[in-house]
Image 1 (cartoon, rainbow, N blue to C red):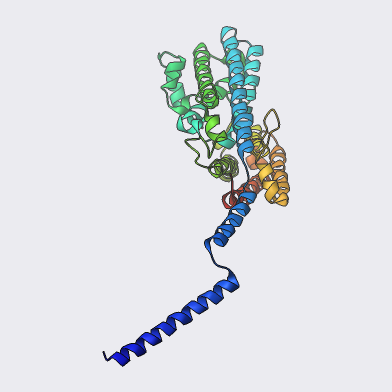
Image 2: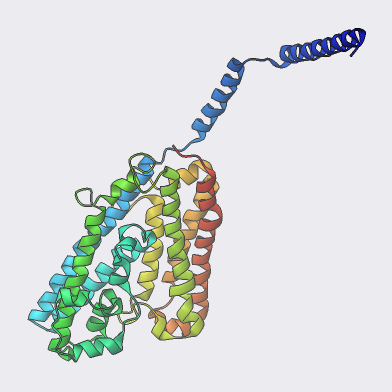
Length: 377
């Protein structure tokens, strides 16, 4: 390269560099330069995000202790009363004792059905749901056990398949076919089975209560401390999502299973709690369970999901509360017994399906989306 060509290239390159530098300096003077300003912008963004975050600590604590543990405690207490009534019937099989045991079964059923709005955690991982509430009863195998010489104890019942124990086996033995059973018609072998399977049910409700109790396995702590010390829920959002999904599952089951299956098939054998004529109360209590979770209450008022939803969308909160109560009332408008209404009162049954489906849709499309799209501390 010739020297004059070199000088020309150097001059042009220098001029270009100066031009670029000048443009940058002008840009900085107009827009502001430096890492301090960038840090300030980041700080403003972070502060805005934190201001929008919802602290779900109270909601999660009240759900775990005031709703779940309180429900399971009531269930276990009621199961103890049921066991006492069944033992009294076994000792003196008269009509008065039978009717007391029937009443105790229905009373125990209420907290269990309400608890189906949160069928996650130990009730799932420890296999307690199917052990307590499998349906339908395997009447063929049940008759086989009753006709055998097999020892009947809580432990031997525990080894049987789930459709031979739990709520509905007890229901079948206490009520039989929906009409008032006569105490004198219950055989000694049936009383023996009834007592053993009720003892087994009581052991399962105690196990479930202990799994959530802070003095036991303390699953309440896992939920209440989500995003902090919990080893299961890494964030508050995870736990809030679990709560909403629990409500969605039972709404779907009631609308598209418990009510719809026997209704669509016109098959009374598919009706849950048909022996006791308790089906409609069961369905209502399932939706009351949703109401309990959403409002954060069981025996006492707490802070529920409604606090979070109301803060984000007051109209959605009001609408959902109305939808839940409407579903409870619409189910209650179905004439008893439900197994007759699936053919004789089809409009009333369809109205109940539609009302519960509305609850499910709002949970799926609006409330779950709100949880997923929101920030939590």
